[in-house]
Length: 72
Image (cartoon, rainbow, N blue to C red; front, side, top):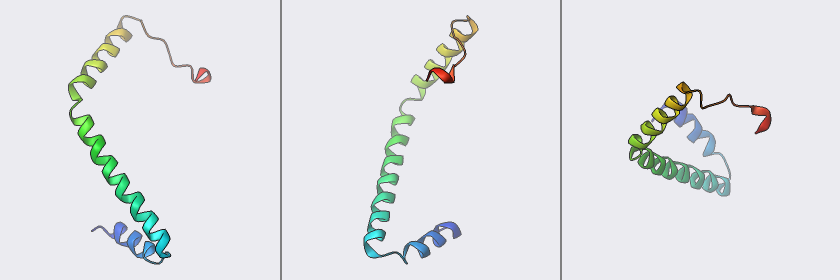
């Protein structure tokens, strides 16, 4: 366990039980979500590469335009 995680654990252990449970639930959900996204992205590497190539080709052919943040 890293020192930073130990520090967080020490601080969290001083919280009321209801807050500790909320924090634990949040952390477990975050870890579950990270694992899910990791799986999804690992299976989509070819697709993402193809989309990046297509975008680069469109840009080279001047078929793209600069992003106008004011229009978002």
